[in-house]
Length: 245
Image (tube, rainbow, N blue to C red; front, side, top):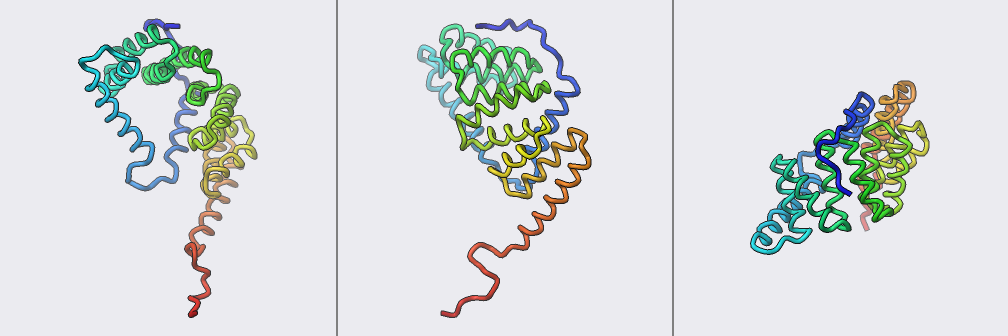
């Protein structure tokens, strides 16, 4: 299914901006290193691969993957409308090529068109209802629009299908927290984060929900756990001296 470029979407309102600010705060919280993250390295590698794929296919009939590489290069250059044109061509000629749904939704979301992005991802889900990437990205759209129930359902599916994916797990925890399910949220964070970080993230969520009392409690717990972690001896040292034997 194709979606016209002229479609009008709902604008991103205060609830969506709160969710976006919260997501960014959680994504960057506690990260002080200036070294590229694994995600950044992966993105850089993907862009290089796209450029290489595009160059190799320059004199060959375009395949879905070559067209996808072209669309990504165009998007990276800020030529979003041209990228959308190429992605729509892929979906018109190869409607079962799932990566095109993901990339098209990303460009639409970057243009501030969440309704179009959700329609695109939903079309992909009709072909692959258990795909974790589609589910996670649709959950992000729901989250940004303040529909935390639907976002939670999407993230639950993504996390269940790809349990090793840290992003899916933390997105699941975020949605649970925004629903006020603090205990479930904390347990979800504790499965993938250090204890202090889990409590810190829950504090951020509580503050976004204007629950200052619980936010203060979680901040205090995070601080205490952080102090305990810093005071612990390095792995392999008991603090009792070195065995002379």
